[in-house]
Length: 353
Ligand code: NAD
Ligand code: TYD
Image (cartoon, rainbow, N blue to C red; front, side):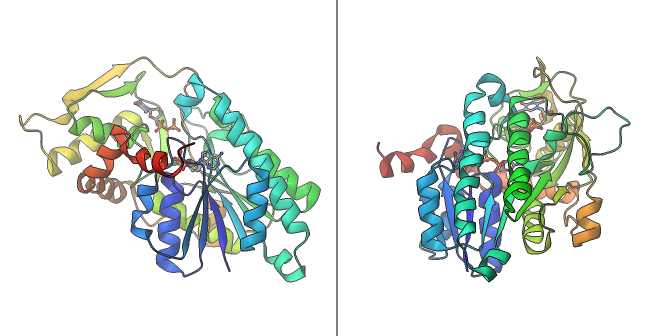
């Protein structure tokens, strides 16, 4: 038995593979194109481990994906590969369209052809799990109920629109071709190996580097935070027991305004790694121009996955965020390599095209 995991050199995918192989000996084929967000250092602890097979390439490469499927005969494909940063999608949406929409389409095509020729038992057991986001549902007002799986799709950024399109393709491949698909829509993740362009790792990094902590607009936008290991356990659970064609919202029941998150990070850093001048890190907070089209609030109602599959997050925000800050303090070399770009040297050496 084998699983093919795409985008597994990124933040969530690498945590997923590390957790998977900590709990099982089932090998993982990791297909990742190593964009700026892909970092094999995340998986350095698996060097020499035959259970992890890394392949550099795109989900949009039909021939490559078809070859990998034929060669390894995976029982499942878990699709994490995506362009994932909203701000980048505002500045340059093209890559988001290519990877999230066209790439997912080509991946689905290759998987459909592979699935079509499997013998009966393998065909019945095969799963395609698509990892998506709560951002496809759009923005909530302060008192709106949290997103359920039946909320209308109302994506507002090029990122969320491209993810919404990919979700629709996955759904259509189930209804039209009978592909055995599962979709998860998760809230904002945080934890180890998070690229420091996203709010939480950026604030930790900038605080320690003595740089400003940028708050977009009034900082009262609300996100629902989930510790990345909890997202990984939800994906494993949906893969194991999810109903074909169903979608599952995954969230941590942790709605927080951005400013509160940043204050919490500053307080933890004041305690674990105080500034040399003894002043609080929150003095570095700076208000900057708001993101265009900024969604005001996301909140996930994770009742369905709990009721039907018995999944619940293990971490509260308080425990998860403390672990996260400690991880960044303990892994300053990783942060330095990411921020200097040194992590990409390996790619340059291996794939000098
Ligand atoms: P990430 O940007 O850290 O990692 C994405 C990975 O995909 C990188 O390793 C990158 O090299 C790879 N990749 C990009 N284009 C590719 C392509 N064409 N072919 C193969 N690999 C490619 O993203 P992440 O935060 O780990 O998110 C993973 C998935 O989870 C995404 O689909 C994202 O939409 C979804 N998601 C993320 C969050 C979050 O808070 N980060 C929340 C909900 C859902
Ligand atoms: P981000 O981590 O980019 O995730 P997403 O946009 O997918 O929710 O941003 C989380 C929130 O933090 C979002 O409301 C934008 C805000 N934000 C800032 O205020 N300052 C920053 O420097 C960044 C990166 C984000």
